[in-house]
Length: 130
Image (cartoon, rainbow, N blue to C red; front, top):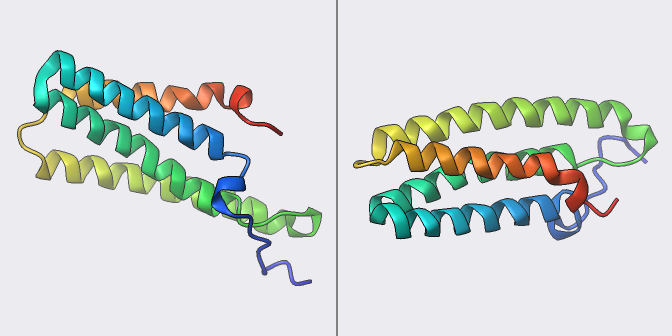
C-alpha cells in the first residue's frame, strides 16, 4: 500500500468530529445570546466570530486526519503542519474579510464569541472518544 494513498474515514467518524460539533453548538448559542442582549448587530457579529473560529478548525481536521497507520507517520506529520499553517492563514483572511465587508460590526461580540468558541478546544480530551 502506498503511504500517499489516504485511508479516509467519513468526516463524521473522525475522532475530532465531536469537538467540531461542540464548537458549532457553542457558536450558535453564543450568537443567539448576543442577538438577545446586544441586538441584531451583536447577533450577526457573534455568528461571524463563531464561524471564524469554526471554519479553520474544520479545515485543520480535514487536512490533519487524512492519513492513518504507522507507515504514514511522515505524511501525518506533514499534513498536521500544513493543516495548522492553513488554519492560521484562513483565520487571518476571515478576520480581514469580516472587518472589511461587514458594516456595522460589534467587535466585542465578534471577539467574545470567537474566543469562547476557541475555548472548546481546551475541553477536547473530554469530548473525544479515543
